[in-house]
Amino acid sequence: MHFDENEPQDVREQRFAEERAVRRARRNSRPIDLGGAHIGLTVVISALALLAWFGELVALGVVGGIVLLWFLVAVIWVHADGDRAGHGFQRAYVATFGWGDMI
Image (cartoon, rainbow, N blue to C red; front, side, top):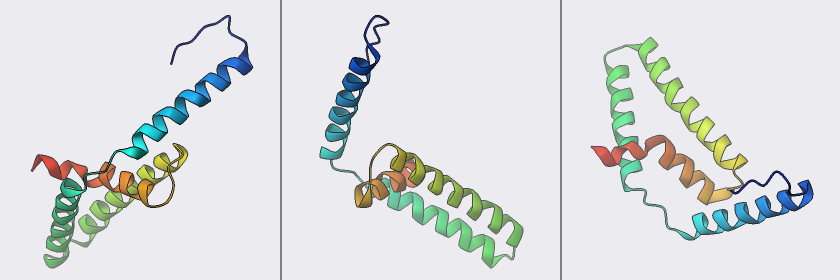
């Protein structure tokens, strides 16, 4: 976004709104790859299952809480960015578990 200090505020806000709309349309037109996120979710579920199996309930609560908090922050961020419904949920899912691509 280009910022011109001599530009009137209402013109600047209109230009910024148009730029955001173009970026949002471009972002929503691309398909989302969920493969790595599925791998990341599988690893997290496996780790939580192992913690539960060995009776590490405090660690289970801490790790599960951190993952849940991260996902909620991602959902709030995506919602504030203007993405709603399924596409927004997929973006938050990839933001939380997308690190599975690196495995």
